[in-house]
Image (tube, rainbow, N blue to C red; front, side, top):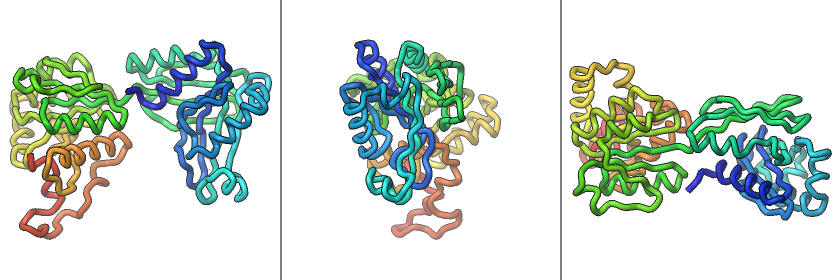
Length: 349
């Protein structure tokens, strides 16, 4: 399964190649409440077919109507990009179903040979972050290396957007927990790779859409060289499999590196990595261990949910301190358990 941006770009390129007129629509700015954030994409062809979205459906309906009734040439005069705003007045907000006072600004771009969508798709496939600059006067596009994330930047003469590869999750260990994590990650449009060199663990493990590797985990991490859109989670409880892979992951650009285990085992792991492998405190502090947010999880599915929630929070830029649900020193929980700060989800494994 491809991420939504890739689906939009691929559809726009395919329609253009087939000879259909196509508009690429980008949410550039929003004010107040809005259904879709800046950077959201939609493609619409001359028949009114769409992929992606820029609102809950109301703005899409109006764009489809305009394309069908007026044609793409009228929507974008002289084949040049156009800027459009919805929801400026209370009447428009009500008409287009925008939340209370919300305003959405869009750039509509006629797709042409110089749009460089094929080159952008290839960069994503090769896991290269790309900055795309659209000249609003001519429609010309320039591509160059960019940041992994970033909101669009709109000026009087250009729209600059950032595109990155699909987020990727590397799981060390094939088991029930990795199966649930894989299912959740796939539903969130992550590319998922499960690595386990143990034949007995891999024998009964299969899941459509997941790449299963029998390499040693550290060999896999070194080969893939995790980038800033990659998360790595160790699930085996076996230091021979987990530790070397974690060392390599912590020295990479991975946005999240985690490992399951109790607090005692986490402390022992940190000591091993410090004493025997020379990792510094900054690298050790980057390790999420025990992995997962506290949600009182008991089953593998619940533990997977807690880990995936922490991965998504890290992907979205939340600092770890913001994820602690209860202040340090809170009283013990009913049933004799310790506070959520002291008992992360994965220590039940």
